[in-house]
Each structure stands twice: as structure tokens, then as C-alpha cells.
Image 1 (tube, rainbow, N blue to C red):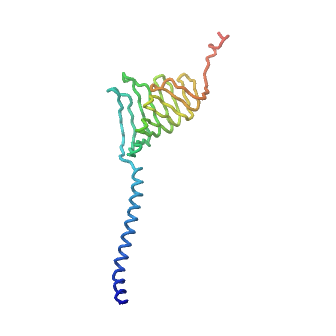
Image 2 (image 1 turned 30 degrees about the horizontal axis):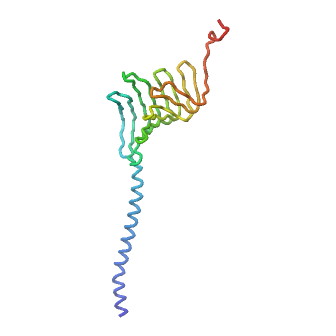
Image 3 (image 1 turned 180 degrees about the vertical axis):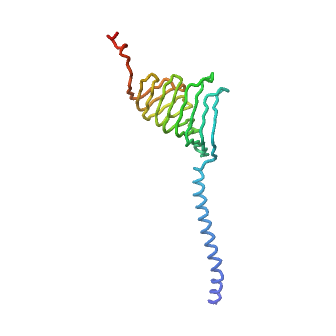
Length: 196
């Protein structure tokens, strides 16, 4: 009787071993699938080269944005687009005159927040001839304003330079309100009191 049980055990042993191997393989596969799925969330949905995008409102061109590379990420909670090789945005008045430009080495557009964050060597010019420089500038499209909490420098176009930490402007990129500002102003001697 014991030998019969032993024979049965030895016959079933390979099947039992195969079953255990299969089950552990399934568990590993599920773990692997979970790992892959979590990584997939951060993977780009699409990549586009030499992108030229025009944003309009009520059939009027408002912004033209060009970038050599745009990567779209389809995060269900917060979809966004990265421009890791730089970007140029040109802003237009209703009559298509240019009211300003922004260039930066990097930008990210966040759809749900309705903002574009320009980063690294941000340079802004406006129709008044002013040049704004910072390491970051946020275009809050819903609020129709630009702002930053980083150090800024603005060349006012006449040789005067304003500096500060933090700045804000409206959608026309003029005027700029600078927090904690200091400046270098050129004074013409003949304009000084008592000088003729």
C-alpha cells in the first residue's frame, strides 16, 4: 500500500512542481505588468518635431508658438506638453500687430491648469521696447496675466534697468510690476535742478 502511495506521489510530483512554477510565473507576470503600467503613465503619447501652433480666440490670432520639439504626455489626471529644446511665442493684438515675444530654453504647457511655464533663459520683449529677463515666467491664460517669483531684470529701453524678485504683468506684457525693486537710472545732467 505504501509503495503504491509512493508511486502515486512520484507521478504527481512533476505535475505539482509544474503547477507551482506556473503559479509563481503568473505572479511575477502580474507584478511585471503593474511595473510596466506605472512606467507607461510617464511615457510620451506623441512626439512632434518643428512644431508651429497658432492659438486663436473668436477667430482672431492671439499667439503663435514655435518649437523644434514638443512631447505630449497623456496623464489622465494632468495632461501636459513639454518643449525641452526651447520655444518662441509671439503675441498679437487684434489687428495682428505684435505686442510681444517670449523665448526660453524650455517650456511646459499644463492643460488643466491652463498655464504655460517658460523656464531657463526667459527673455520677453514688448511693443514698448522693454526687455524682461528671468529664469521662469508663468503665462496664466485664465487670469490673462504673466507672473514669476524668481529674480528679474527689465531693461526699460532707454538705458534704465530695473531689478527685483518677483514680477507681474497683464496680457499685453506692459506695464511690469516688480516686487522689491532696485534700479539703475540714467539722469541727463541738463535735466538736474540748477543746471542750465
